Amino acid sequence: MTTSKTNKLKILNDPIYGLVSIPNSLIFDIIEHRYFQRLRRVSQMGLTNLVYPGANHTRFHHAIGCMHLMQKAIQILRTKNVSISEDEATALSIAILLHDIGHGAFSHALEYSIVNGITHEEISLKFMKKLNEEFDGQLSLAIDIFEGKYERKFFNQLISSQLDIDRLDYLKRDSFYTGVTEGNISSDRLITMMNVKDDELVIERKGIYSVEKFLIARRLMYWQVYLHKTSLSAETLLVKVLQRAKELAKIGVELPTTESLRYFLYNTITDHNFNDEALEVFSRLDDYDVFASMKQWCYHDDFVLSNLSKMIIERKLFSIEIQDKPFSEKKIEKLKLQLQETFDIPEEHIDYFVFLDTASNQTYDVEKPIKILNKKGKTKDIVKASDHLNLKSLSKPVVKYYCCYPKKF
Image (cartoon, rainbow, N blue to C red; front, side):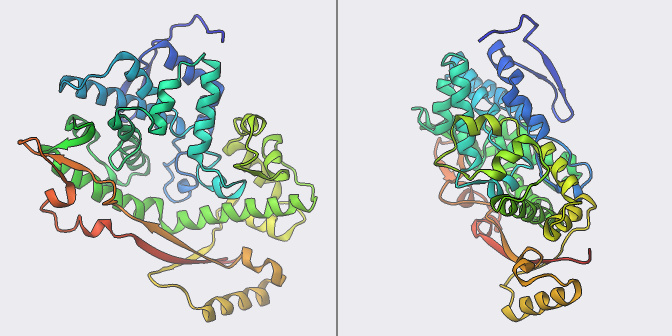
C-alpha cells in the first residue's frame, strides 16, 4: 500500500462542531480511500430534500462527525479513569468512521431494490475486511469492535446501542440540515455524562434530563422527518422505479444506465454471491448513477418506468394517506379501478401505482436499556430512573399504515 507524503494531520471545518481534527495518518489514509470518498455521493437522508430543501448532507459528513464525537467520548472516558489505549482509540475511531460505508445509493432505498438479502451493515463489514487487507491488518481491532467480538463490551455500545455515537451525530446533524429544531440534542452534554460501570456504557445521574430530551427528540424526528408522509411517498416511489427497472432487465429489455447500476440490474445479487467483484462494482455505485439513469428513463418506451421516473424527477409524488388501522380491501379495489379507468393502465401494472405499506418506529427498546448511574454506583434503566411518565410509552412500537396512489401524470 503506497501512501502519499502530504500532511496527514488535517483539520476539517464542520458546520455543526467547528474544527474537526484527523487524529493520525492511518485514519487520514482511510478517509482518502476511494471506498470512503464514495460517501460524498451518497445522501444521508435519501430523498428527504424533496420535503426539507436543506437536507442535502451526505454519509461523508455524518461519518466525519461521528469520528469527531468518538474522539470526544474517548477523551471524556479517560478523564474518568477508564483505560483506553492508543490502539483502542484508533480502532474505535475507525469502527465509527466506517460503520455506514456499506450504504447504497440514497441510503436505504437500494437496500431493498437492487441487492437482496444483505443489509448495509453486512456490506460495511465486507468493505472493512477488504480495507484491512489493503492496510496490512491495521483494521483488525476495529472490525472486532464493530462485530461486538472485542472483550470490552462498552466499545461496541459506543458504535451500536440506543445511545451510541451514530445517533448522537445523525439526530443533531439531520435536525440542523432540515431546520427541524425539535431534533436538536445536546450531544456534547450526553458525551460529557458518559461513564463505564461493569464494562457497560452508562450515563451519570445528572445527565438524565439530557437522555430524556434525546429520546423525545428521536421520536419527533422520526415522525416529523424520517417518516414524514411526503418522504415516505418519495422513498417508496424510488423503490418502485428500481423494482420496475430490475423487472425489465430480467426479461432482456435494454435500459440506458451507468455501468455500475447495470451490473446490479442485470445480475441477481444476493448475500450468497455478493463476492469481491460485486463489492468492487458496489464501491462505484452512488446517488449519481441512479439519478442519471432516471433522467434517461423518463423517455423510455415502458409506461411504468417512464412515468414513475418522471414523478421523482419532476417532484410529482404519490398522494399518500396514513392511518392507524389497515386499509379496507374495498377502498383499495376502488382506487385501482378508478386509476385503470382514468389512465388505461393494464391490470398487471396497477400495483406499481396503487400500493400499501407500513411505517413503524419504536423510540426505546427495553431489551437494550440506557442505564443511569447514581451517586452510590448503582445503575437503573432510564425508564425506571426517570420521573417522566411518557418514557414507558415510548417503548411501545408505533405502526402506521399508508396507501400511495398518483395525483396525476
